[in-house]
Length: 448
Ligand code: GLU
Image (tube, rainbow, N blue to C red; front, side):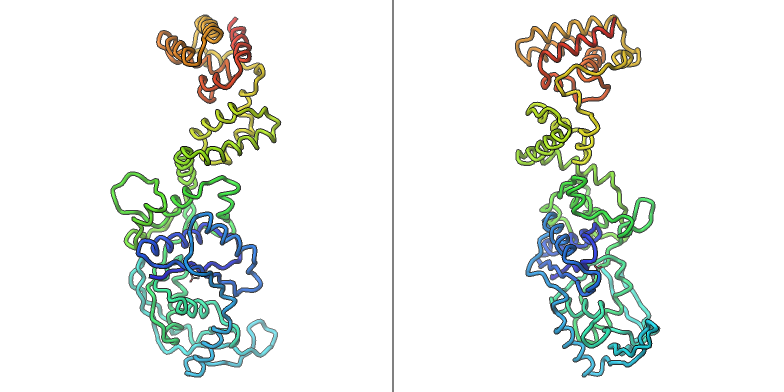
């Protein structure tokens, strides 16, 4: 098996192309074949070097490694010309003389393929048998001139020259396939197997358009902070499922290579579900955090974001935010926004801004007097416990007597001024002892 992905560098590397690349890569690795990369840069006006770089960057970030050297279509003009000349010499195509369609009155010399078939019958591994009538195509143009092949011609020539055996691509190319098969036949090439994968649709059912939903793959990395494993995991399920009973949706590349096959490819349209992507990402962040280097990279991001806010840089604070973020946040962007929105400001070693007493009593579900007594008790525990462990044990004991809500709720509010925060005992680990005393006194005063 030899497969390829053939992106046109006319825009940033987007999810649709990443998925086509991934599917081809997985097929090649599963069946023991080769995965090739061809840059279709023949459109001189719209192709740009920066897009080529972006495609290569995106593929390499996703660990979708191509075998063999990259083929640049624009460097193969001579080869294309030779083939065109051969077709004309064999009488399978001809150079026609006609007026340009642009109304300029210019005379042009396109190469047209002689079409004698009335239909093309071909089989698609996903869509089954397809019959395309081609009579009305007439002798269609395959090159603007003998030196300037059109897209369909170059694709067919290059696929054959690269010995591609299976063409797996988006189903927007179904409409091109009959024409490409006619060119193939004229050139005397063997027909590869085709598999057209359903395009990705928005959750509202419309097709994802490059213009409207153009989030570049590298933006998922650089802006949103999506892990490459999560993106791979997410896109693989758009158009494929492993057809086994396993409940575990988290799969790394090696697992995917084992499971991926033609049989799992789906005909139903693939639906984009951003929530699912974020879910995958949170799972992968947690999974990866066992690795120290990964944890350090999150800590570095926390440090940089805190620094921009002129926040105190302290190892305990950074590590505390890191633990909390791994529980709570789906993406690096969520983490950065939380810091920037002041969600963790309670970790700064100062007294808290005044908060409402109703917060302390959980909208009056807790009694003022009991809350007061408990906070006084907690304050004593904090000032007398020799170690963190004894402190924790004593607070746990207190919670057993009065109920977790009656103990941990006011403790959380006293230490953070918020109804949602990281777990109060973790906050207590981070804050200096004198600040904890100040905040507890602040809360006790509110009970008066
Ligand atoms: N260059 C085409 C595209 O970017 C792909 C051609 C093909 O896969 O046959 O859509």
